[in-house]
Image 1 (tube, rainbow, N blue to C red):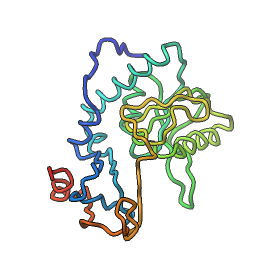
Image 2: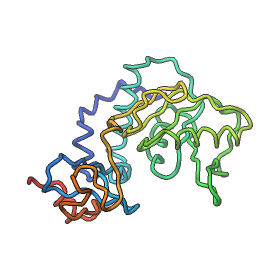
Image 3: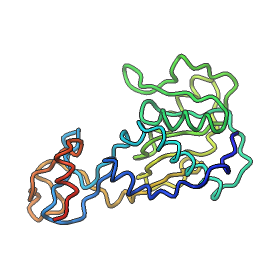
Length: 228
């Protein structure tokens, strides 16, 4: 394990950092502000895409350091780790950095052709059992459980997750199946709404007051985030 104490805390407001990178947006209730049109075609008062962060290794290293330091404050030391596991592709950079820090292998779970997940065949599972799970965004926690299950299936024995690291946790879970979730940004899932066109829960008739916009478009992002 590398000495994380040699690094100073990043002292980053991660909510603000994600907003500035275009990773995170939340509607403020202003009726003049458009809502977000998601890639699914649904509309929401929340948008999260950590790609602009995860593609920047220099920022991801700071995120990893802050996650590890937060885990130490909450759980202390003394946890034996055999490997870092993660679903591809969103959590790949975080898993690599955690593997470097803990000096253990990192391995990825991929989607199967006809549904479900499996451990990438390039990774030999060996005697690995005690694992950390990495994820960029935790929505419900199911992706974490599927990742653990895929590794357990590949090994022929039950994996023992010690804890999970994530950038954003919007699952409302601090624990999942007994292991702790460590996150940089927590979102109350009960405040997040997603709906079909014509069913806006924030307007009396369900209709949009302003046309919803796709956040990934830079011109749309300016309209979503400007002062109204």
